[in-house]
Length: 112
Length: 114
Image (tube, rainbow over all chains, first blue to last red; front, side, top):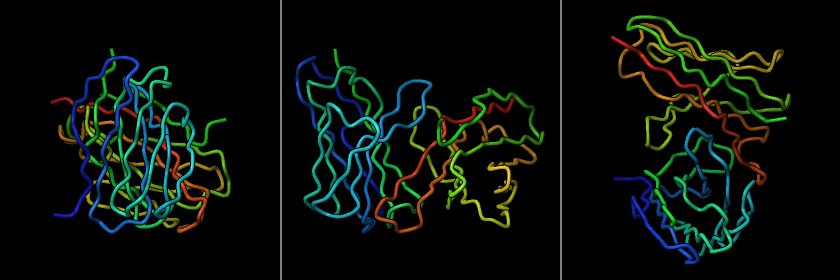
């Protein structure tokens, strides 16, 4: 089955800890994206990558970091510098930039 | 000014009703347009792309008005299962552009009641 997987579905961390969210796709898509969604809010772009070993900041990159060492993987690290990390994190991919995007099931991160 | 604006709703309609959502975009150079559907606490899913000539998929019709810079989604014969948030998505970038990203609206909430 082709698709995008994110793990874990729920994640709990203490304040001050870094945490890495996983995103894997087997769709052979070039582009991958990370979004954050807060309750009642729209999607906000954190980082995106159009090709291996390259990525760009989105609208709210502060406090986050990413890597793209393999085409199928785009992990997101939420660092302790992120002021309000509790949110629903969504990973997406698309065949090429600006094409329609397909989303993983998301990870709900709670930091206390 | 936001790239994409949507009426957040909520729209509450009975089963069988016809409901329409509009979405305005600010960049007249926008190239591609989509509607996504997001169920509560789930990921967004592509509902349909929006083409210049308009397009239809079963009970769903999407239209683009470039002159007024808005796109619309019409749902006919609403079903209970249509209850969701509908996201309008646009991009000013050409398909495949190395600058490429999409801009998502905040969504319009629809509830269909029996």
